[in-house]
Length: 89
Image (cartoon, rainbow, N blue to C red; front, top):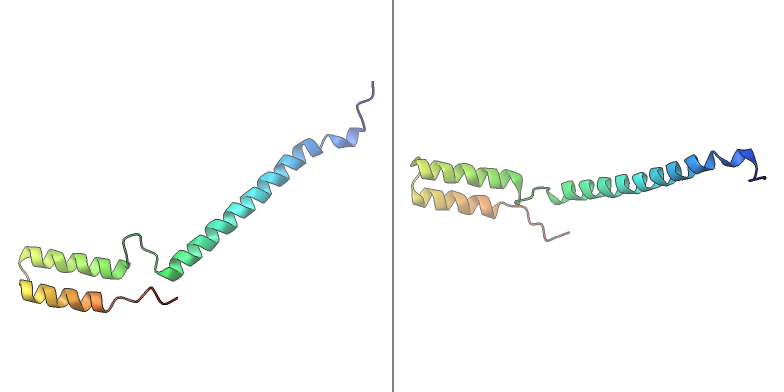
């Protein structure tokens, strides 16, 4: 009984490898583009990273008593006023 030519067996291995590589390439491109877009937007899960860190430091200084409430609120207002506007893209 003849089941076909002997040269067909490599395709059983090559075709799944081809599709795995194609899907891997697509996933890699999507992840790469999302990372690039995330960096362009400012990329922090909880807002702007430098401002969030500065606000946390300011809150810690206020909690420790290094600055009073008036000074805390004034500095906090300056920090929030200097945040980059993300809506203009």
